[in-house]
Length: 116
Image 1: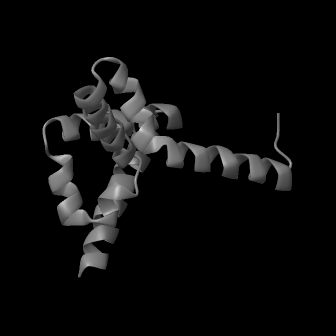
Image 2 (image 1 turned 135 degrees about the vertical axis):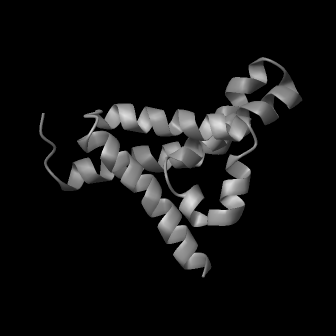
């Protein structure tokens, strides 16, 4: 049952993104930014952790979880190091995802012919 809930919740997030692209004519950058900010705002109100408990991977895999991680890291860093800790904490939690995106993008550019 956990797999079904994760699939449906993650799928609904994707459906919302696709509707924003098709109906409202947002660009992919707008949708990505909106989802990251939405994840951070929901985490600020304490709702995203409850969503993760319910949906599992359906909540942690989409880009909304990146906003959640950024805010969690910033808050933790601010508690430990003050104002400078905000930037340190944000990238401490998300650095592995950012590094993986850079690495796999580079590898894809080596394998395939990028246009541009």
